Image (cartoon, rainbow, N blue to C red; front, side, top):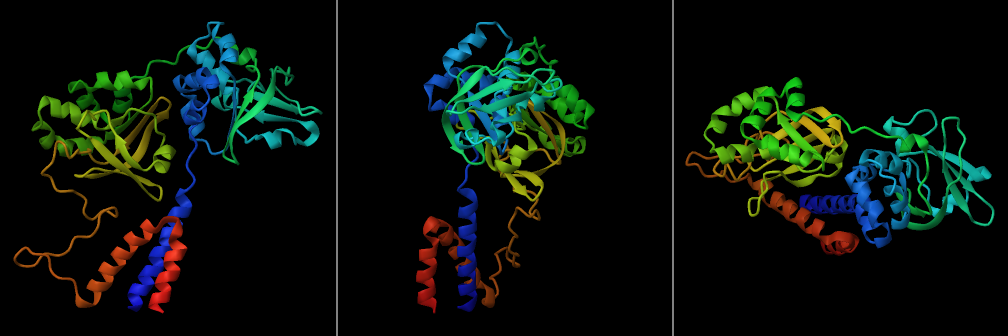
Length: 399
């Protein structure tokens, strides 16, 4: 009874810890702005310039949104999407400015760094923005030039949504003007995925990407964001006997299974644990795997195998490419295979078999308490926010 009591108290404490650490959700700028039709154009360009993903993975940030009319002025000038990215990145600050803070600026004026500054494309002070709080409640904004001077071209309109001190979304009246940000920006060089793999110890998998014709699907998804998990040459070599037994369609599905149609940095993978759909996902065929974090390690768990991310090959939006130590095997292609890596920390230990192949009974002194503890953990997690009530009731019954 004493052991069961201790297990119960520990499980309830664990439940409280789980609940308290998961109630805060990461912000999503796309979802925030989707509630306001007047920002639909601004929201759209945050997505196609990949700035939305940059915003979402930052912990402290301010987004200065402009309405559709202000965005029309920018679009009418015929800027390329790459120049528009620079202009909009001026409107994203690497600090938190809610409405209250804007009206309480020490000394009435401050300068803050923008995402344009962080990109490395801004020369000198051109990636900084001045914020000035005037008497009477007016707050104005202006981008700095090469000399550190600035012209206040926009004013604070309202607070859209604030999550102190994580993200503040505010509306400003006009686009911030900057000759540096508005300068013609050439498109980045085309990304050759297989060449990158060849140079970083994934040549064997690169060959499979090409021979299976999966490269076409990879390239089609690259512009919108792509993350690829590339098995090492040694891992592919060990897996080749199984690979050769697959049909042509199965081979392509297996290669597509190693990529997801979104950009995910290593930090994003660590904070976004859970099931990931892949490029192989089609209709009823789930072709998903589970991302799990153990300390600094990131593992990819299928129903057949567990692989570990061993290094970062490339991490620059829109492409993230990571090397893994095993070939990912989807259950859709290997339904009869037993899960490998039973000794992995992510796997539960197996019970020993008796002579006739039946599981041996646990020792008498561990059976009841073990089952009770397992049931208690499951029950405690289901309690949710009412865990204190559950704890007081059970303690009163035991005591």
